Length: 128
Image (cartoon, rainbow, N blue to C red; front, side, top):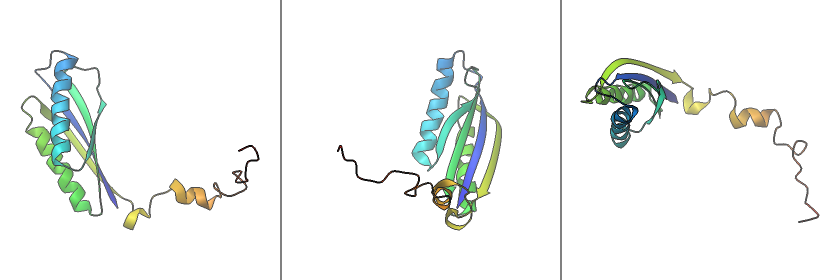
């Protein structure tokens, strides 16, 4: 399993208010979501009129697919007529076949006995 993440910094020179900025950002996010299987959110510079930072993530069983999707997101951002792409940074992280390299989660909880009868009361309630 591979997780690809990108940080895209946009300059929005025509924005004169947060409302102008939100219109541009929302339009880009909606276009990206409609065309690509990604999660996208505004992650920084929330109060600056002319700058927006977006975080994008994609999960795939192929690192090349993650790279391809993130590249397509960057291209869509570059084609936005109201914004300029100031910076793009990407990273693809491998978590092993089927995500077996992920640490924590339910497997770790089971290993330490978090759901055993000693930690939870599974007895019948007399009141209910």
